[in-house]
Image (cartoon, rainbow, N blue to C red; front, side, top):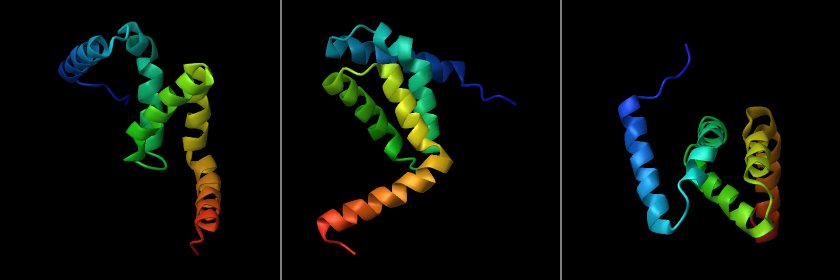
Length: 106
């Protein structure tokens, strides 16, 4: 059975995002146009490599979009690929080892 979000919660989410976008001076359509992909990314990360890493991953996608001018969809696809269990099982230990070697940790 497919996951169905509570309509009341989704209405609160929409109102919150519209208010936040307005406060930040961002066109609310930026959120609505990317909502499905962003929620899919969050789902992939939260149910894959790191539940608490999900919101920070969304931040990284937005930041990368700003800094590199790579399309949001391209960034989302790249990160979702890394977040899949098969890929993250390979990449994350390598990244951790590299981080440890650069910091002098063993």
